[in-house]
Length: 112
Image (cartoon, rainbow, N blue to C red; front, side, top):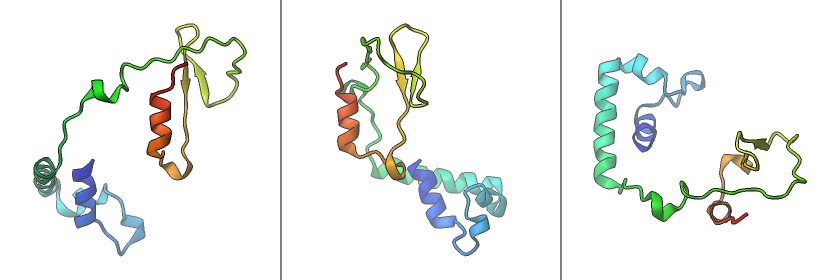
């Protein structure tokens, strides 16, 4: 994602709002030139950033929340029952599309 963001920052059309989309860059540059540009930006990102992911330290994949209360109303579009009895998917729509880190930490550490 960082490489794609950098491509848009470097090659995006800031003059024409109608063409201010990533999809227009390969059309303007040509697909081969776009892929070369992407590979260049990707190599820069790999050199400048630590891209290792420690799933165990994050605790995201191992966390399961089981709701034990029978009085949960699932008619809301934010709470969707799963196939497994007692399990639900919670849909979160953060304000302005950005979830504060503190809120994410609370969600990850939730112990239902």
